[in-house]
Length: 112
Image (tube, rainbow, N blue to C red; front, side):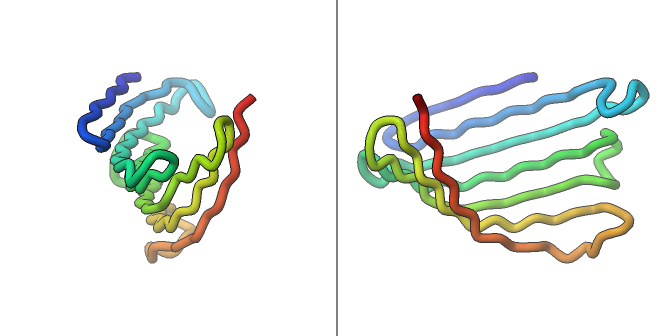
């Protein structure tokens, strides 16, 4: 796993590259990439763009999942995060449509 982050003037870029061997079986290796760019609109509200790529067999051509999302992260009080985002997913599985699927997601995270 390699991860990084850079922050300047309200902009934050986070990234991660990871590889896992032996899951779900000993002859399989997985590969994943994540990039996230966020901008602090004002304290407590961030605009967030994200790109995720996951390949369950490291051939980088079949079985891959790609997701792009754009949303807002709201921190109304310390310890509470509300996320609202639009996400588009592209699946490259033999038994699925190659068309992208879109979702509107909302999440609430509570940190104790």
